[in-house]
Length: 300
Image 1 (cartoon, rainbow, N blue to C red):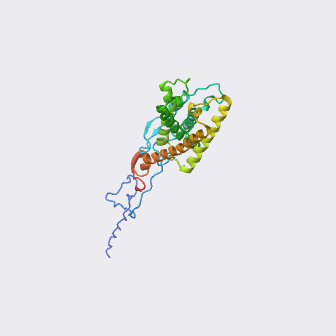
Image 2 (cartoon, rainbow, N blue to C red):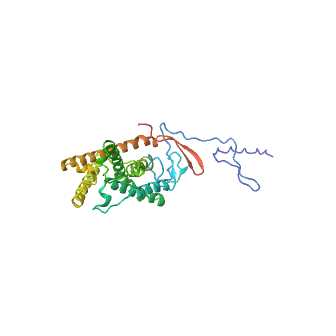
Image 3 (tube, rainbow, N blue to C red):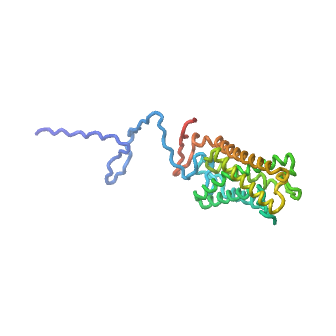
C-alpha cells in the first residue's frame, strides 16, 4: 500500500478581528498576538474634529442659546443655569423704567431708549434659551449690534459729563438714588458687553456699516428731540438747551462717530478674548467617553 502523507493545514491570514470558528460548545475568542495594521498619514494631515452638539460659533466662549451655561472647553459640562442670567438683566432694566405725562414720555431720554433696546435684546435672549430657537437667537444678536454700543456710549457720555458738571445731564428736579443711577447708566452697558463677549458669536459689521447705523440712530434721535421740544417747550437734557442748533448738530455727529468707534472697539476686544477658540486643545465628553481633540489651525 502506498503511504498517504497527511496534508498540512495552511496558516490562516492575520486578521484584526480573527477568531476561532464558532462551534457547538465553544465561544468566540480573540487570537492573541494578532498584528495591528496602521495606515500611515501624510505629513501635515489633520484629523477632522467631531461636530459639536450645538450650533455655537467656534469663537463663542459659552454655549447659547442654552438652558444651561456651558464652557466651550468642556462642551458637555454644565457650569450654571443660563436663563436666570437673562432674567436678572430684564429685572434690572424693568425696574429702571419711569414715565411722565409730557409728550414722548420718558422716551425723550436717550437713556430710556437705550434701556428699551437692552430689554428687547435680553428678552430675545431669554426666549432663545427657553425655546432653543436659532432664529430668535439671531434676532438677539442683531439687536445686540445696536443696543450694546449704544449702552456703552450712553454710560461713557453720562459718567464723563457728570464728572465735569452734573447739571448738564441731570435736570434740577431729578433726584437719583445711587443704585437707581447705576441701574440706569451702568448695568445695561455691563450686561450687554458681557453677553456679547461670552455668549454671542462674533460681529461681522465693519466700520462703514457701523457708522451708517450710528448716524441713522443719531439723526433719528435728533429729529425726535426737536419734535418733543416743539410740543413740550423744553429739552430732556439741560445740555441741549445750552447749545445752539448748529452745535447740537456737532454734538450728535460726534456721538455718531463715537458709537461707531465703540462698535469697532467691542468687536476688537471680542477677537482678542476669543481668538484662541479654534487653536486651543478642547476636551469634550462625547458618547460616554473622554476624547482629546487637537486644536484646529495653527496660529496665524
